[in-house]
Image (cartoon, rainbow, N blue to C red; front, side, top):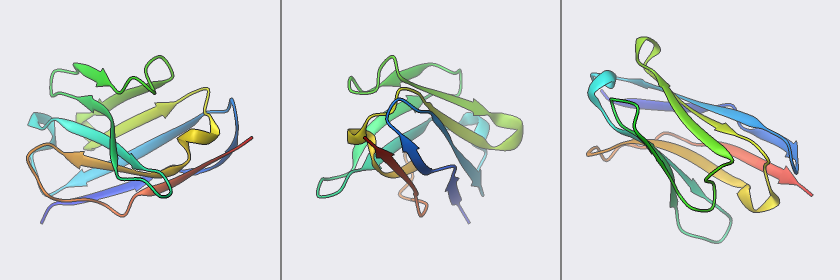
Length: 113
């Protein structure tokens, strides 16, 4: 059974940093492309970042230069390192496996001004 468990969210002041984690089970994680998404209040879920099995990364324009995605294949974990956080980054953050319909419960990020 495929499962994704996100963690690491919290309350931080603008300009601060957080690192989110997503532990994946039930699949061969090392050969999967992973994505991070977020859902801000009153909006649809939006793609944030993407990392391939060979560690190629891609970012949405609104986080480029501030967020970094990485992975630890031994630990079946994908990370989202978030720096220079802005109030507009507040929302529920999810990870996802490309090609799979599964979602975790998400982890809440709140950035105060």
